[in-house]
Amino acid sequence: MVTLADRENELRPIRANIRAVTPGGFQLETRLALVRATHLNTYISVLRDMGAPIDRELAQSRLPKYIEETPDLYVSLPIAMEWVARTGRDLPAMELGLIGAQAASLSSLPPTQQAAIMTAQTGLKRLEALSALSRYEDSALEMSIRQEADEVRVTCNMRGMERHPHVCFAEWLNLQAIISVMRSVVGPTWYPSELCFTSTNRLPDAVHVAFPDTRILVGQAFASIVVERACLALSTSVLATNAQATHRPAPQTPGPVPLDSDQIGQSEDWEFVTLLRKMVQPYLADRSTNVAFIAEMAGISKRTLQRRLKLCGSSYSGLLQEARFELARQNLENPTLKVIDVAMMAGYESPQHFTRAFRRFTGITPTDYRNQNFVMGSAAI
Image (cartoon, rainbow, N blue to C red; front, side, top):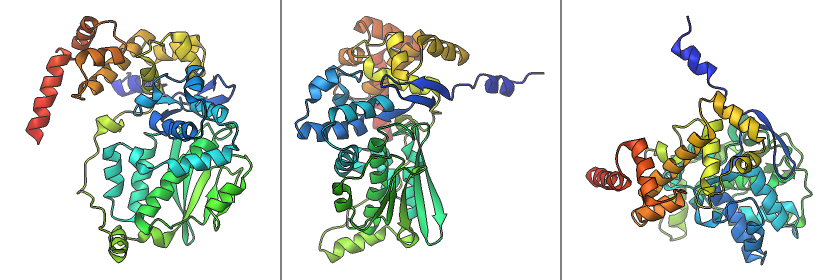
């Protein structure tokens, strides 16, 4: 007898271990690799400050036109890295990665994620919180913590992306996040004893100047950073002690804040349909959602995309409807946006079309949903 559990397992091919080729020609055998746009925007900001023709390069790319205005949406990681490499081609890749890392900070994370990290009570617990949350910033990233004698190695495995020619741009941001967490415990002068990259790009002098006492290795099996075990055991109250010693008030962190699973996607498995839905959302406002275009962004053929959606019990038209609804529902929670603006941002043809579609998902109108959400939020205060 076939049980419901058997049937669910049968319909679970959606962890997309597929052979994909990005528009840049890189072959990828993994689930779809997406990154939160805020991390690409770090490089956009750096390159803009350098005088690179950002607007022209974005207009000629397959990235969403308004990516800087939608930092919490997701974009294709391979396409993002290829765009950074092309736009910043006047600099060595590892130097541009370093500059991007120096411009990055934990403040780019959603507030609930920042709170989850900063309220942890030791260096180890902060790193564990970062590790648990990291895959919601980059779907290809698998972060882990390994004991090595008197040290601990924090690894950043970019599953399926290890041989991408521009992977160093992602690796720099991942390693910088770990450095930022450790400096939040030990202090701003902390440096790791070792940095490892899978990238084989040459190390320019700027990297050695920035990390003078750090051993830096390239061409490794995975990116990683070595941390002294004693630093991980430090209580985060050390930060307060250091602040008092320099006559600066210690930053106040709130009590433990429960993670909003809806905001960070914790309740969702990062599988094919979910990732594809996320990848579509930045293109909804432009209505650049032709199935052939999205298949190209995913690095697979139109036929393969449709076949995999069918295996998942879905369809491309259904996925578009879900992506629009999800984006619209999130934007309705922003009281500064008019309902008509929410409709346009999600790619609906008209406010009337938006209302009908939203009612199919929820049974109520967008305005009623917003009012109901506001009342519930006020009651919780």
